[in-house]
Length: 275
Length: 267
Image (cartoon, rainbow over all chains, first blue to last red; front, side, top):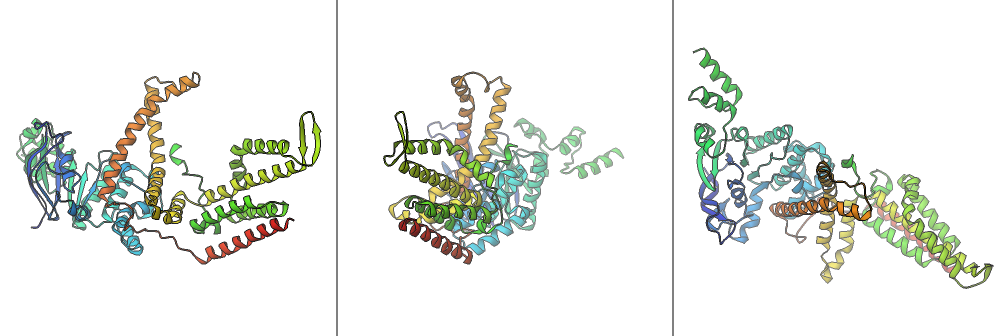
């Protein structure tokens, strides 16, 4: 499999003189094309710092980051990296540039110098992908949080990136908005083949990924499928993370199985109760 | 609700006036103001008034809205006309105590008043029928020649766009902060003007802090979307002059020329 992101002993400190305060410590990871990776960690674990390295917003203090084959430390590469690795942030309000939805989604293609007929097509496609095609002429400030975040995603999709990095895209949203955005993310990964890297501290969101990377105090502590990672319940609790309730209930009952969805959990419980 | 505020004074519509190219409207409005100030006389101003009335009719603007826009300048209009009536020398029509009213004074007062009122009417019509985004676009195009003297035209219009984009966001934020401070016992409604001004500090400080944070995040998000300034940038909606725009321009030019001719002939 092709590796779209590769970090080699990525180390980052926010202040150069305080060598002890590592935000990231020798993080070496490879992310495969088309995968859906969740990066899990509690506040201050370094997960957002990690995300910001993937398209060159932050540069490593030591080590290397290769995004889509380009070294992020070379300023010449930045445009190519950012075209291929799109980034969605937490607060939709602080990502939208224009006062009309279509103008906002068009922002990136406009910056790329795409001719206007093609921009129109890209804007329509991107809005359709996130299911917001009815809101072309709306003002973003009249939309709900989930809708705004989907517009922000459409704004990135208009660049046609291969990798989508999402830095806690649901943190500011209500449950309805979270569901909308998670459904959109999953669809992008499954149907459009976009590699998704989701930074989150919600266990249920991480459980939907193909792979979970747990970061604590700037270091990768776990890396594997949700089943593997969630089977280490005690270790996750020790670093301040919980596991999904479906995993928790089975663990409390002393069962070895790991259930990621409610249905799966029910089946296991049924079997258990029937003896 | 506070979320429903309109940006600028734009009233969306689908009339001939709304569909005109914003650049054309801006230039014509500007030309109209210049013509107003170089002409004088009853006929030219009657024509100018007709021009405004036509504009109101075509754009289906509520005339009450125009009158409303005149309210803030009423004082200025009164002030200039009174000064003109009493201080312009000429043929004396009436005299009492140390004041004298002259024919020239009355005429100048009339001209000045008409000019100011029609100037405000014309610019209001422009604002009512053109969205702020279209206006910024038009401004960017029209100011483009200033690029030659290193005036940052694109940056200027980008700033305007972002400012307009953040007006509702910041209003909402102000609302939240005020509610939070009220919940802590802040009092914004009583006391003299100084006390009230002082009460604003706990609103302004958090508002500024959050604005800087927002600005920082927006800048990062813009960089992630490949923003590199105006060079090499294309636009989704390209302004294009249509037949309607040419017709409008020709019509206005003829109108303005007639105004100038009648003024020069001195009817």
